[in-house]
Image (cartoon, rainbow, N blue to C red; front, side, top):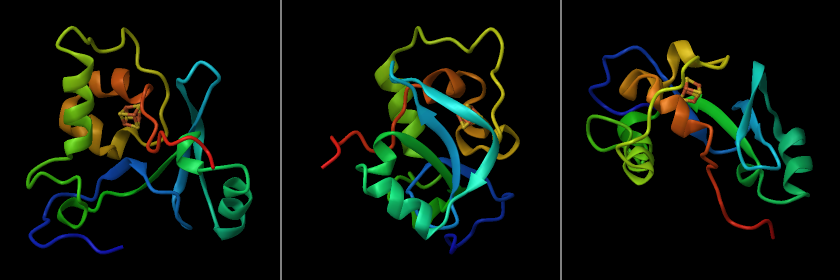
Length: 135
Ligand code: SF4
């Protein structure tokens, strides 16, 4: 996937990527709306996504990861991912990092963790990429 110009930092992973072939399945929404993370990423293909779409918008109930696109992404602010910044702002200044980080298969390369640190993981578990109701 293409990255923007002037990207010299190591490639980081977007933890809220669109459901596209080649993406990794990162987690699944539980009935209470939290994300349960997979222990190991599962790369998804077109067949998986076609099956998932038959039951509605995949991003409304699953989270996917792919290479962070930096300036090629409309969420890029010019120096950072605007999504996690907005989520943290919305959740308020009282949000704290988890006492103990849950296992996450992309923590070592996660854009949000690299940008915001452990508090990103507190917010992350509440995020669905697409909150539209399934058609
Ligand atoms: S923010 Fe934390 S929990 Fe979410 S994907 Fe990144 S490292 Fe994993």
